[in-house]
Length: 365
Ligand code: B12
Ligand code: SF4
Ligand code: SF4
Image (cartoon, rainbow, N blue to C red; front, side, top):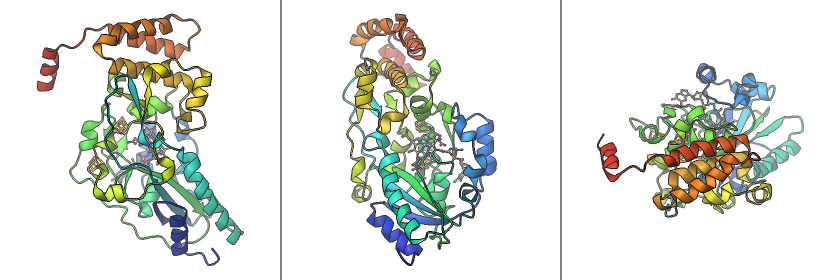
């Protein structure tokens, strides 16, 4: 990569298997007020790390002093095909976590590019970021022209979907920005994601993370508010509903033809809720650790399993489940969060079954 231009970088990104790539000029976010208001309203829930390094998060030139450019890349990981939901007590895993962990898979290729650039430009700085660095990844990607931000706050590749995972290299190298229409409105009057979100977490272009099922099941290390248990439905790790309903995310000939990286081929779509409830540290290490599921602890998985099992339990298995939950709730050796969730789930199981008449009434209202 002797004579580095934006075009040569984009070629290299394609060769490395990235579905999308572009360059943004390094500049301060023009949404600082919105970000501060979001944090002040506590919409980050217990993710206090989002309050750290705010100056770096809002300006890549603070993250990498004298940065001039942000090279943005994206992997496609799914095509929006609906899930088959024909098994009871099956907890769904969000699509991004069904194959390889993007923190490893995407980062490996991004670091190859970073190392090549470092070799050809030893006087310049290059910092590779994937998810965990303090940077507003969707904003950078939209600026680089990779897509546009939808009302569910995710980056959408128009007509192909938001099934994208993002990464960046922030650099002091001055590169020609790729053309972008960052202000592109891909939503118009649509509000499908807002209407479909089971916890009412979405307002246009903002998500109350403290209510989002993705946060509740993956990030929250404390018991989950029981008033949100039913809304979690069959999601044991993450949630895809706002993407599943988005017109841009539907499987079409174009989206099926769009190249997805083979690393994300699904190896797990669902997890059996009762099996997860029975996991010990060894089972957990085999099933989850060192992969995309690693972000949730064993106790969080077992808490989620209790909720999903309660939500998806067929009437004829209620007694069996109640007996199993009682053992958990009464064991002094149990994790306190799991015990509390078992108690909450038991009281939900004890409620009378909705009758056909109740269901008809609630559909009418
Ligand atoms: C924290 C976090 C979460 C939190 C909070 C989500 C959120 N919406 O912020 C939780 C745990 C809930 C979460 C969930 C998910 N996440 Co997440 N998450 C992040 C992370 C680490 C930081 C995001 C952040 O800074 N949030 C703070 C809020 C305030 O930022 P914001 O919404 O962008 O705020 C801006 C807008 O409000 C904007 N704004 C305000 N008004 C307006 C008006 C208009 C018109 C526009 C355009 C913008 C705008 O200004 C604000 C400041 O920039 C990023 C990685 C990263 N470093 O960026 C991944 C990331 C956003 N997550 C990602 C994914 C895949 C998911 C899930 C789909 C996973 C899943 N299936 O369960 C869900 C999606 C839920 C959803 N609808 O957002 C991907 C998204 C890829 C994409 N296509 O956009 C990212 C980029 C990770 C990655 N490297 O690929 N996530
Ligand atoms: S991921 Fe699920 S809970 Fe979170 S905003 Fe989207 S639909 Fe709502
Ligand atoms: S569902 Fe509709 S409103 Fe939501 S992001 Fe997609 S196009 Fe925009």
